[in-house]
Length: 512
Image: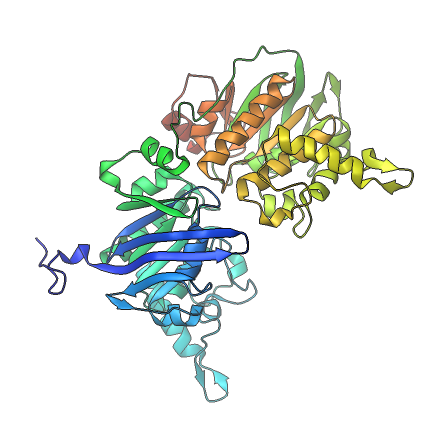
C-alpha cells in the first residue's frame, strides 16, 4: 500500500497535480468555456473527451498558456499559476504533443529534439552534448532510431516518438497528447501505449485527447466529459462503459450508433477486376451494386488507401480493369472519374478535401463550378442557393453558406466535403476514412448521410481502419492485407477480431 501524502492525507497516486476551477473563456459571440472544473492526479492517464466544439481545445490552450482565461483558477501542486504564455507553461512542467507534428523534416532527430532550445559552446552548436542528451531520452522510450537519423527517413509513428522525446527533455510533470494515434499503424499504436504506461510508472501525468474510445478505455484511468463548454462529469474507467460515456457526451440516449437502413439492391454500378499496382495491390476484385455499402478493411500500409487512389484515377493500376455502370472505363485521372459519376471523400480533409480560408459555399462549388455560370461568370446566387440546399440536407451546423470553412467543427467540415459532390450527379462514393478525427455525434450524422445517399440510388465504398463502423454500416466487408483480398464477409457474419485477423494475416498475393 502506498504511503499517504503528507499534505493531502491521500495515497500518493491520488495527489492532485493540476486543478482547474471555474475556468471561463469568452470569444466574441461564443462562451467557449463556462466555469469548467478539471483536475488530474499525479501519475494518471486522464482522458478528456467531448464532441467537436465542446471546449477541449480551448481548455488545453489555456492550460498550455496559448489562451488567457477570462475567469477561474489554475493550481499546480496547490499553488495558483498564471500560465500567461506557452513558455510559462513549459517552465511549470506542462508539455503538449500536437496532432500535427511540428518537426523539421530535413533536420536530424537531435536538432528537432532541441529545436528552439539548442545547446551552444561559444558561437557554435554543441552537437556532442545534444546527441548525448537526445540518446538518453530515446533510451527512455525504447526507440529503434538514433539522434543522427533524419526525420524524413522515419515513419509517422517514429516521428511521434521524436515529439515525445522533445517533450521529455523538459522533464514534464504533465504531458498532453492530442489525437496521438490519428496517423499511426496498429503496431505503432501499441508502441505508443507502452510508452504511456512507462511514463505513468515514472510519475508523469498524461492528459489524453482522442475520439477513439477503445484507446481511451485501454490506457486511461479516468475520463472527464465536456459538453457545450461545460464540464459534465468525471468517471473512473473501471466503473463505466463506452455507451455511457457517449450518452453523456451527446446528452441523449444512443439508441443506434450505426443507423444502417435496409435498402433494396439494384444493378451493378462498379466492377473492379484483377487490379494490381506496383506491389501495393495484388489482384483485387469486387463489385458494387446500387443501394449497397461495401466496406474495405485494412491497417495502415495494407493498400486500402492505394485502392481509393486507383478508383478515382489519382494513380493508374499496372493491370486489371474497371467498369462503371456496365461500361469498361479507363479512369486515367480524377476528371474522367468525375465524368463517370465517381466521387472521392479523401482521407485528409484538411489538405485534400477543402480549401482553407474560403467559405462553405466556395468549397462546395469547386467540383461542379461550371453548373453555376451565368454567361462567362460564376453566379454566386446560384451557387449559394445550391449550397444552402445541401446545408439543410446534411444538417451542416453553420450560420450560412458564407461562413469560413475553417470555423466549422471537424464533423461539419467533413459533411461539406461530402456535400460538394451532391451538387453534381455523383452515384459512386469512395469514402477513405470519412470519420477520422470526428466526434461520435458527428459520426452518426455522417453515417446517416451515407445511408441517405445509397437509399437514393447511389453506392458507397467505405474504406476504414475503424472495424466497428464497418461492421455496423456495411452490407459486405472486403478485408485487405499486403495488398491482397484475404477475406470477404457479409453483414452480420464477422466480429472485430475476425477483421483484425485477416487484416494482419500474411498471405501470398491474390490468395483469399
